[in-house]
Image: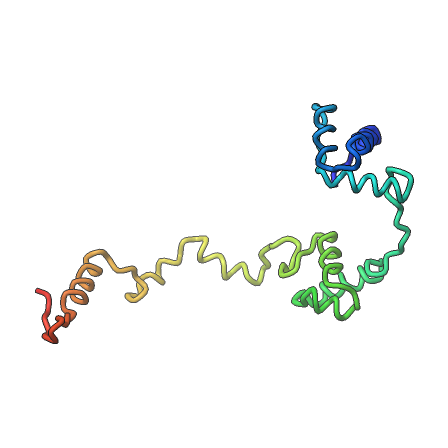
Length: 181
């Protein structure tokens, strides 16, 4: 829901009352009276009226509820589990801790960790560096000398196509077998 100032909300209530609580008519009247302002949806007028009726204020009711899932302890446990075994799924972590998997997603997202990414920054380790060097230095031409790995040239493709297509027997409708020339 878009945030409106108290003056805008008061004008919405006045338009809603002037149209006998008709949301669509209130929307048109509000747009006529205030052409520069953004026009809210027709359902906004009824919601605003309901909120004003229930709370007596334009302010949203404060939700005084303690967090049960995203406590410091649960966040530390989830982050420790990811650090020790990064292959765990968010559902697996959630089942171990006893919270929802969406809470685990939010914990990991707030910590700049993402499931299926084992490290925050993808970097090459010294162990894998010697495996990557031949490809960067251009020494991979030896692999292309193997005949079955070489891509076929156009003349080979044409020859294979001609042999395959033009030597295929075609059966006529009368059961006689004819071949292409």
